Length: 463
Image 1 (tube, rainbow, N blue to C red):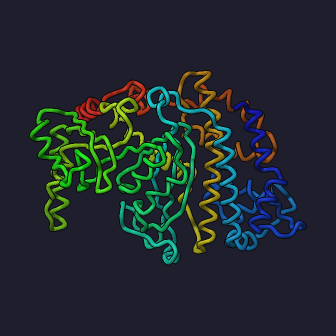
Image 2 (image 1 turned 120 degrees about the horizontal axis):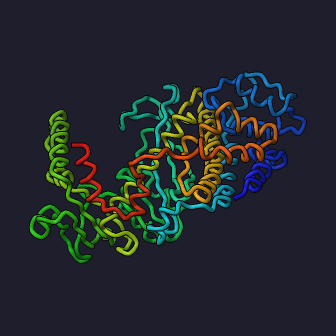
Image 3 (image 1 turned 30 degrees about the horizontal axis):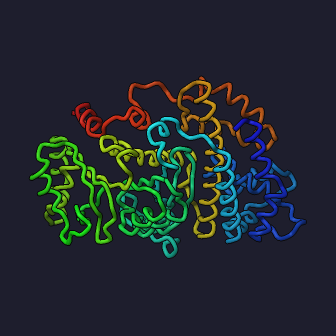
């Protein structure tokens, strides 16, 4: 995508005609004589700049006025609009449009991933993040004490992320106490044939895996402790994996078995890596301490899980070899870095207010902001690879966009072309990842680094 294309995208998406149509459909603006126009309101709420997420109502009114000096709203008037359910509907409509258009525009995909995982259509990661709310919202957004983030009221943002393109596929909101497992089949609505789905144990359900297989896609997950595994589809008794390893693979560090998962007998490959002794001992000590504090004893299956790292997939050996399958699974952690950037730099989890419609509006508007950032990121990733054969730093890019309100000012003054030209010139000194000895996970996959060898090397460095 050339700069002309990305500027055209902004013109198409945020022109008054398109925005007015969205406002009319959502009933956010009903009168054509209203001083507040759809385009200026939407841009004021989603174009990233420093302090957007933490700005007061007066600050947001000031942002709107920069686009239209006649839109002299009071803080009370803006609060009334934001707290109305129509504002929530409007921002969901904007996000849906951005999701569609951004995916059409971003054709770039990470070459290091495609080189080694080119047999898959897309690599999708699903995960969730919790934001703590005012306790007065407990009835709609009940909280939980799980996961080290406690609160009477919490909202869970469940995201599906396209790893190769580096962009959002979908987002949904749930109560904080709703387990990820209850949403394990949500991804079925978005996967395409040939996709690879990587998720943690929170989404582990046999029926979910079955439906992914039926959709012609692939999954990669850790094996949940206590779930039955059968070597043969006709077997009635599940395999005792621990005993089987003792008898048949006592001295092997990497074990692969083909079999069937659960009572539904989902065909899978089971890949088992033996953990280093120092890691096993450390995990046993920690697990024993936790069990003792709860007044319980560790089960045999729990002890087994500490000795080995076990992964399951329906992808063939040609698609992902056993040696690197565990390394590929570690790509899941990249979404944690995404959440970290969104929270620390874009402050998407700063959700102030006691009106549930307002909270929904804030979340959807910030997800729209993220889509704009991802559009610019996708554009500059392509440029960086083409011109410098290096990797773009997403952290530095976000800093560049919000520094001194540069991006916001360019949108407001209709100077996006000039802004992007200056940004391209600043790539070498401001937007590239710092040189370092430590390789990224994508580089390790590109070099087909064995999970077991990588794991051993990492723990040797620690010890």
